[in-house]
Length: 111
Length: 113
Image 1 (cartoon, rainbow over the protein chains, first blue to last red):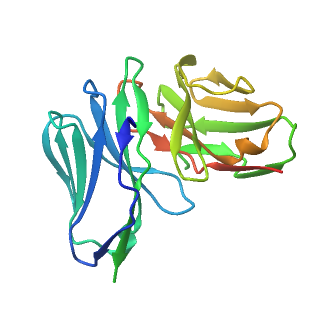
Image 2: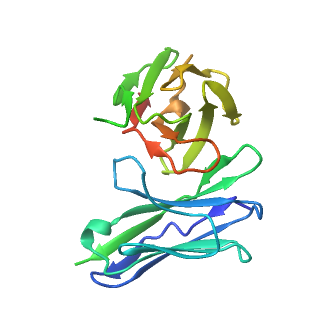
């Protein structure tokens, strides 16, 4: 079982819709969770972090964490073509605070 | 002012050569990392240093040797390059190793021919 799993997509949503990106993780002791956005040919950019159960909102982005079910999700409201990118889920696992990334979900926002 | 900068951006070299990639961060962070992103875009941690001390060393061939002269710099030296080493290598830094999000450099695209 992969430590951090994401559907690689592509996930296509129309402009203005809500994009929902999901991530599951295997280590129940994981403590910190991050979402990164990576445009093609560019480096990953941190967009959200979440550490406790529930929702965390930042502008059009909402991160959701459910430790009991071991999933973390990212909602993007009012999706824009500029949101088209690969979204990477990252989880801090293990005793050495190792950061493990998922494969990433490619999001396409259709104008 | 670039927060995390790495050089070179592109590196094309022949098999068997030795090469180095340099990384510097001006964020005052304590922890620096090297990641490898392969052709399938999977991003995998290679090394992590906290205040010049190696804290994570994933299953990486010992041809790869990181060096941290101070907490603002983390260089990566690769000996005897192989075709399979072709990838994009990212340097990153974070406030500490306890879970803060990381800031990435622009990447070094290494092509071994």
